[in-house]
Image 1 (spheres, helix red, strand yellow):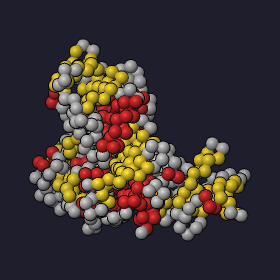
Image 2 (tube, rainbow over the protein chains, first blue to last red):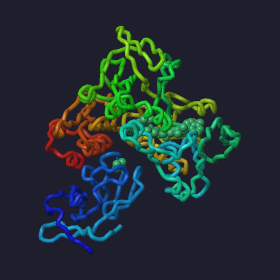
Image 3 (spheres, chains in turn green, red):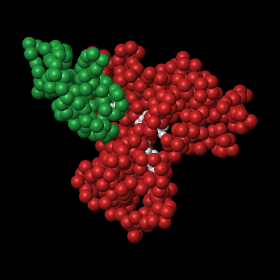
Amino acid sequence: MPEWIVACAVDDVDEEDVIRFDHHGRTFAIYRSPEDEFFATDGLCTHEKVHLADGLVMDDIIECPKHNGRFNYKTGAARGAPVCVNLQTYPVKVEAGKVMIEIGGVHG
Amino acid sequence: MVIVGAGEAGTRAAFALRERGYTGPVSLIGAERHLPYERPPLSKDAMALAGAGMKAIADAGRFEQAGIRLVLSAAAISIDRAAREVKLESGVSLGYEKLLLATGARPRRLAMAENSRRCVYLRTHDDAEVIRAHLRPGARIAVIGGGFIGLELAAAARMLGCAVTVIETEKRLLTRAVPAEIAAVLHEAHAKSGVDLRCGAAVTAIVDHGDGVSIALADGASIDADACIVGIGAIPNTDLAERAGLAVENGVRVDERMATSDPHIFAAGDCCSFPLGVYAGRRVRLEAWRNAQDQGNLAARNMLGRQENFAAIPWFWSDQFDLSLQIAGLVDEGVETVRREAGEGAFILFHLAADGRLVAASGIGQGNAVARDIRLAEMLIAKKARPPRDKLAAADTKLKALLAA
Ligand SMILES: Cc1cc2nc3c(=O)[nH]c(=O)nc-3n(C[C@H](O)[C@H](O)[C@H](O)COP(=O)(O)OP(=O)(O)OC[C@H]3O[C@@H](n4cnc5c(N)ncnc54)[C@H](O)[C@@H]3O)c2cc1C
Ligand code: FES
């Protein structure tokens, strides 16, 4: 069943930045792109389990803070050594100043 | 295309050849028997966590899918440059159009330790297995050399309940590439966890006896241990290049495109010395993981006929206890430092040249406290930026804003 949950307020995330969002023992990363759109992925790098929210957002790339592995946060695609496993992404919508993500189903 | 050395640089280059659309044969020759694996965990997780396995760079399926022919347990012993052939120990010869040397480095050996069977070194997975077997709770472990590998192993050994003594000749730890302020933080962390640190200590003799080894120091002290880990630096593997008559200068000498003195042969990673464009062509040899990847990538592109210059900034990290250190650029290029607090004891030092240009940044803190700012500093270094000192020092000035300025 699709389940939409409120992750944060729009203002919680700067443009071209990322924050961490924890929910029921799971951890996610919520991104705001330079074009002012929101995206969500799993919170941990697929290389070693490091929080991506400590990393750097550049255009549509999130760079892992630990060893600089890169993902496209819009598609989840791994974009550079040492990461080779893609990142899970989640649908996002913005309603009344709140960023909501759908974590029920599995999207890739 | 033939690549000698199936480590970080060689493996990255092999995949990069495919990513760049090369469809001809690619052979990756490795002296070790294992699938290419990551070395950094050997002194960290794989040591500290019981049962942590080997972290492969890619599994066998990915090599197969990419059509990379992996030849393992096979040392290359000579290069015939006129015939463009590499000869393996087994007697087999492989012809090449372009050859990449990615042979890495090996631990510098300590002459005094040659007769001891309890002195061990760390470079490979098999070395790590030997060391790990020594790290039982209560075991007495001596570490000669207060560099990164020695200190990471000292931390891992402490976490596993060993009694650890670190012996360093210099007056402080990590003299080679780390600012004193950061080395002091690590010194304190080791001391607090109970590591016995002996700086300014010279080893005068190493003697095995029945069930241990005694290490005599110049000040008269003697340290008894069950095993002694020697971490006193690494030497580039240049034998193959030397015998083939290639230029060697603290590593296989390459130009800014990673080409050796033979235009059909390239070199990358720990085995080569290269000019760093960002520091006016200063020739260096790095022993760093991301550098090995960057150079493997670039060498592959240039082997395919591109003419790209190496432009990356040196970058390094180390993990000890709950602390992580990151350094971008070469600290010794700076003459002045500006400090920025990063919260909860974490801090970053910006290293400026005489003309105010940012040339390096180093930071330490728990977890990834300094990672993002070090990465932004790296981009500022690449831009040859001269950020105002007060902005660098002010924690509330975002480095991203300085980058855009
Ligand atoms: C224990 C340890 C911890 C580290 N931690 C960090 C860290 O925290 N951060 C960091 O930035 N860097 C770290 N490094 C450094 C990093 O791992 C190296 O810079 C990197 O592995 C270099 O890659 P390379 O491909 O040049 O060499 P290597 O990875 O050493 O690979 C070279 C390979 O070539 C093979 N070879 C050599 N000669 C021949 C021959 N004639 N024929 C066939 N094969 C041959 C060798 O057996 C080896 O497998 C660490 C290194 C070690 C050993
Ligand atoms: S943990 Fe993310 S790149 Fe290694």
